[in-house]
Amino acid sequence: LIDRVLHTPYLVTENPPVQVSATFSPFAGDEQLLYEWIICQSGQAWIELIQTSFARGDSIPTVRKQLDKLGLESINARFAIAQVQLQQRAARKFSGAAKMLFESQLLEQATDERIGRYKADRFRHAPRIIDYCCGLGGDLLNLLTVASSVTGVDQSPLACKLARFNCQANQRGVEIEQRAVDPASFKCDSWFHIDPDRRATGSRTINLDRYEPSLSVIEQLVQTCRSGAIKVAPATRIPQTWRARVERQWIGGRRDCKQQVVWSGDTTDRPAYHTAVAVDDRGHTLFEIKGLPDQAAPAPLSDAPPSFLYDPHPAIIASGLVDSLAQQYGLRKLATDTAYLMSEQPSEVPGLTRFEILEVVKLRTAVIVQSLKAHQCGNLEIKKRGVDHHLMQNFDKLGLAGHRDLTLVLTRMRDRHVALICQRS
Image 1 (tube, rainbow, N blue to C red):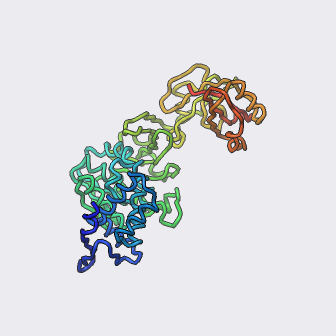
Image 2 (cartoon, rainbow, N blue to C red):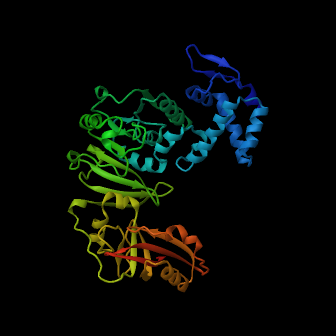
Image 3 (spheres, rainbow, N blue to C red):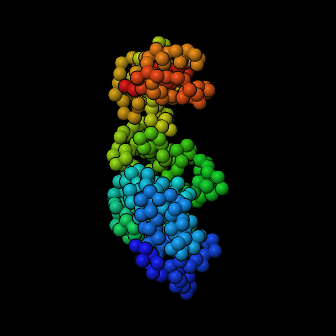
């Protein structure tokens, strides 16, 4: 491996191409050229060497010394090490991360492959798909599994470079076009997926009016292509004029809500609906809830301390379907503006985590500690909603020495602040 690293030349894509040695750096800090180097055969050999060192348990200083002894320029060494660290981070999203390349912000924005697989299933009948703002290829990789004609579009040269490399690394050829999202290029015979830039103004925003491309361009895309998906932040609001003709779906993992997708045209058979879905680590659907939140009556409040508490998945909360779910399963709320639900008898409700309530006490530290010790609490999980309490920062100092795993829920019951001593049911 070391012999291959030291004797593999590489090409920098210039006009004309320039051939240089494997260790000499002409980049002077130019990130685009560093990516050119890391993509080529020599750069990939160095990546493999660093991966091997990390797998052996070598520290970063040790790896840097090794690369220095082999003659790799320090800027290349730092870049290659950082790339392997990004691959390690990306392994939470991509099973093939070790053979892919990343950029920090593009990785953060990329769709997890399990969620991407779930989304791609809605494109199975698409004659042609264009993935606008494709980034490093998170959604693109999955769209390529369901359609024979898929094109990735991004105005960033680096994003196009990474998307092309990552698709090839996963044995999937793809057409990539480096250009802006231009309404003049919209084609009515294509379905679309678009992931607008939420950082176009420098900081992340949930306001669709500040996305790039602009709201007017996105509206033209929906009007022209009709069938497709718009990926937005979970808290993003869509124009009132869209709501009757699109489905809004909130998609999450086991414990969080990852994204909101606005489905239009033939990608949905339930316009105006809200849906909430979660997928597990293998991409299997854990639950899918649908409803019309505007038509659901507010969940009633309980008059007596409940026996069971239910914590809705964040995707359900973001979708506004808590009251619909309560109505469907006969559950009540603790307070009008909190999402916790409750019942007297245990119910199996998809998307809700159930707790048995052992005791309801006042929201006072001394009272809570006394109750936890009485219930033989050893390991404590704390959840809160609708209250701000310093106990959240001090739970590890309570001196609990029991044998039970319990959950402390700090919240409100109607207008009263309470602490619920619970165990997962």
